[in-house]
Length: 232
Image (cartoon, rainbow, N blue to C red; front, top):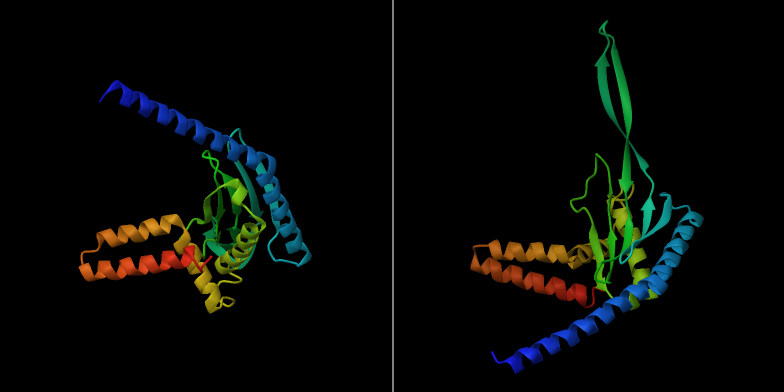
């Protein structure tokens, strides 16, 4: 390779990296000066609405900032499920003693997080207890958003999905309150999570049957198109 070609390649890389660095600085500044405040205000307004509306879970908002990362989150307090964990012991005189420990439901956190790359993600965690344990630890509602893309519409969609996910994973809502449309919304939320797309792709690669591969590939394509199109 000639020296001129190397020089041009280096010059191009420098320009690209300088541009990328400026964009990164802009995203971080936008989060610090604007996006994080808008998110917090939206979260606090939402929490106030849940209090006025006598929502069964007590919610509160917290915010943590680091030099180039940040987080605004809604957390929910523990909630008694009505179930107990019963233990039976015997003393030295073989008298039986029964102890009931209430089973508490916890979790249900909504996190708006700024990554080191300057992008914003919205992550929801399920309600869970010793009796009910959702398969997923968390779901990405949105990921790799530029802070300027965190609009009021996005925040509204996030909060509505958070309410649905709370109800769908709580013992007081999981069995009797979900309609077909809400089940489909939950499916879109899960399929829209990039990690679920990865797992589906891995399942595709591991299949031995060629017809099965074609069918699953078509299903993945339809689901992803639905999520990225009309589904959102």
